[in-house]
Amino acid sequence: MRLRDAIAHLEPVRRICLARGDLELGGGFITTEEFLTVNPDCLAIALEPVTEDGLRETALATLTADRETLAFWLKLVLELDEIMHQGATAVDPRTGSQRYFSSHRHTPGAHELAAGGVPMLACAGDTYFRFADVDVRDEQVAC
Image (tube, rainbow, N blue to C red; front, side):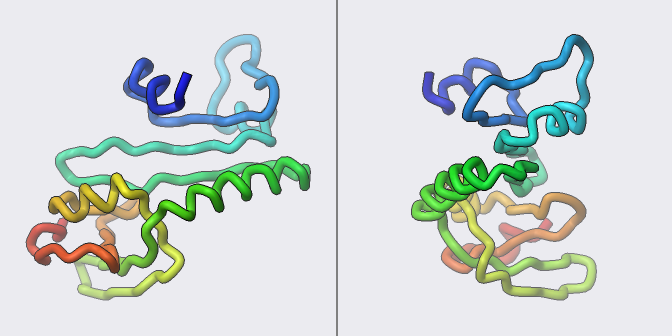
């Protein structure tokens, strides 16, 4: 099954772990931290839904110490990088401070949402992003 179809079938999905082999699911209740401790070679993806406030950042992580597994995940992420848009300015709405991040990446889907006026929010707090390659009016992206 395609990942997009699996997510749609299991909505709402907020965390995904990709693995190259079997995962250890534990014998009962297991926290996120415990899961990642016993499955350090997976690639964990934290997804955020679009809300009335906007779209928060997504995070990717792995705890692997295995060089081959790390190389595999890096190759996958670099393949994704080819379709990503690049560059964003982080804005603190309380102080007006801004900082440009040339390494910030966003998906074509986030790009389309931002172009439509959906605020692009940092993973926590009030900070939001203006994407370098999206031209929208400030009042559309202000939080």
